[in-house]
Image 1: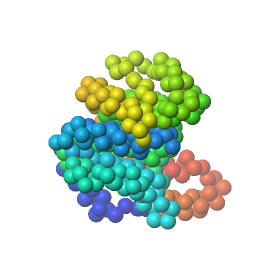
Image 2: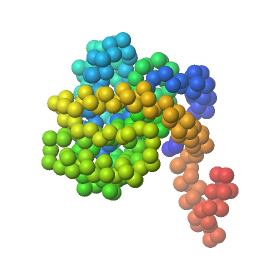
Image 3: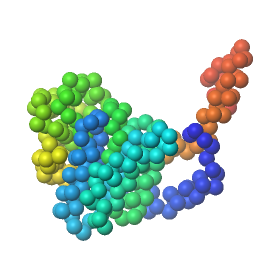
Length: 285
């Protein structure tokens, strides 16, 4: 943390979190949409939302769009308000932009808690669109029952380089903008790379879409529903473990102030016997 937390607010947050049923509940299915920058994640998300609203008129949907932070204010760029403005008159959907505020992994540091709040508010489906930061963008897998990774044909030459990152978290692969040259080659490369993954009961599909034309989205929706209803039930233990790990990590770091740490180290390094490991063991054990 860059600032020491307000102890009163911290306690209020803990009390609020403790009031969540089952730690946030598991009623709302969470869909994560991630992938490389420029892959068309926003267009894919928009088309998924449109089809879900049509198919499930009595269901509620929440969309969390993680946007880059503004340099001056740290706030979100609010891109979703431009992309999804046609849905704002629909009372069954809630759309919210949040800023990364420097957090790595494609999500905001508060995305986990926001997702729990939405679950507790009984949303039927929660969509999380990540900011698009490349192969480090894997944190969404700790939240989502189903994770979609979106590529474009131009990603074909990079599959070997990135398969150790976001390639490992996908339940569904989408090659968007598949009318471009190289789409079939990319599908082949992804399919080949999947043979190196551990065998599971879920056969990971590799689908081609042209989101802005609505092509291929019906097949994508079919696989999303199938994974929601069948495969994700087996992953609750893993998802809870990932969530618990991040909660523990943040709780243990909540009293660490980067400015104070910098000041202490600036003075400590002047001493001839300075050792960073001994320093941390003494002051931050």
